[in-house]
Length: 291
Length: 319
Image 1 (tube, rainbow over the protein chains, first blue to last red):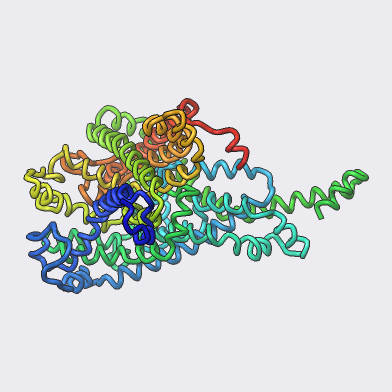
Image 2: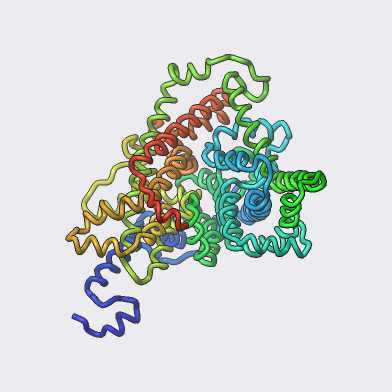
C-alpha cells in the first residue's frame, strides 16, 4: 500500500497514496475538460483548413502549418492586425495608466483626509458600482457625438482619467490597512498631503496598484462594447472589434485564420496572467473583483 | 501639530485657537475635495448628469438628428403593452440569469471545496480553473464557442463518438441559450477563488468536533460549511446577478440574438433599439427599467440576507 512514499511525497502526494491518486486524477480530469476548448483552439490554429473540419476532435494537427497566421495577419480591408494590435495597446496602455493613477489619488482622499461630506460621496461612489452601464451609455453617446468625438479614441480614453469606482474602493480598503503613524511622521517632517501620498502611500500601495492595473488592462483589452459604439473606421479598431469584423468578413470559410488571430489576441492576457498570477489570485480572493 | 492645537483648545478656549482650527478644517476640506475631484468631476460628467438625461430622454422620441420630442409615457406604454420582442428579451434575460448564476455558483463552490480538500498543486489547479474566466469576456472565446457548438463542431463530434446525435445548438431556439449558459458556467473562476478564500477561513476544529459527534460529510456541509460561508455566498450572488443582467458581448458574437430572438438579451435588444434603429428615447426607457429590475433584485437579496446570512459576531470584532 505505502510503496515508495518518498517518490509520491516528493511530488506532493500525501500518505494515503491511493486516495490521493484518485483525488489528483479527478481534479486533473476536470482540468483537462476545462482547458480542452482552449487547447483545441490553439491546436486548430495550426491545422490546414480541411483538417479543422475532418479531424475536429483532435488536439494536435497532423500537418502543421503557419498559413492561418499569415492569412489572418493580413486582416481585412487592407488593414493588417499590426494596426489593430497597436490600437489595442494604445487604448489599454493609456487607459490603464489613467485609471490607476486617478483612482489612487481619489482613494487617498477618501481613505485619509477628513472633509465634510466624505461619507456621503463615498456612499455615492459605492452605489455607482451597481449601476448598469446601459443607463449611462445613451446620454454619454449623445454627449460624445455633440463633442464630435465619435470615431476617435477620446470617448474610450477621457473617462478613464476620472477614476474607476471599483479600483477606488479596492485601494481605499488597502490604504486603511497602512498605519497612520507613517503619515504623521511624514507630516512632522514637513511633507504636504500630496508629498505624503507620493512618498508614503504610493510605494506601500503597490500590490493594490498592480492588481488594479492588470484588471484594468484586461477589461480594456477585452472591451468590445465601447469600441463597437464609438469606432466605425476600421483603422481605429482594437483587436476585439477587429476580430469580430474579421470573422464576419471571413464568414464560415476561413476558421483557421480566425482561430489564429484569436490565439494571438489572447497572448497579452496570458503573459500578464502568468507573470502576475499571485497578485491576481490575492486581489480576487480578498476584494472579490468581478471577471 | 494636532496635539498642540488640542492642548491649546483645552487649556484656554481662546479665539485664536478656534480660528486656527477653523482655518485648518477649511484647508482640510479643500485638500479632501481636491484629491477626490477627479472622481467628483467624472461622477457628475459621466454618471449623474447622463443618468438624469437618460430619464428625460426616456419620455421623448429621439433619433439623434432631430431634437427630442416629449411624448410622455409612450415609450413605457409601447414597451409594456405593444412590443412582444421586449417581453421576449426580458424572458430570455431572466432565463439566463436564473439558470446561469446558480449553476455557476454551484460549480464554483463544488470546485472550491474539491481544491480545499487537497494539499498539493493547489496553485496550479487554481490557475487552470481560473484561466477561462480571465479570457471569458473576449471576442476570441466567443468565436471559439460559436465554432465548438456548430452543427459539425467539436461538441457534436464528441457526442457522435458516443453514438449521440447532437442538436443544431445555435440554430434551435431551445438549445441556443444553453450554449451561452454553458459558457457562463465554464467561467466559474472568480467566484471559485472567493469561495476558496472563504473556505480557508473556516476553523478546522469545527469539523473535528463535528466528526467526534458523529456527523457525516453531508451534515458537516449543511451545518458548518454553508452557514460559515453564507456571507461569501451572499457577496457572490449579488455580484453575479448584477453581471448576469448586463451580459452582452457573448450573445452578440455567438448568436447575435437569434434564433427567433431566443437569446436577444435585454442589453442586446437595448443596443439594437438605441444604436441600430436609433430609437434613443425608447432605449433610454429600457435602460431605466433595467436599472429598476437590477435594483429590485439586489434589494431582494439584501433584504433576504438577514434570514440566511450568518455573521459570526466574534470573528467580525477580531477584524
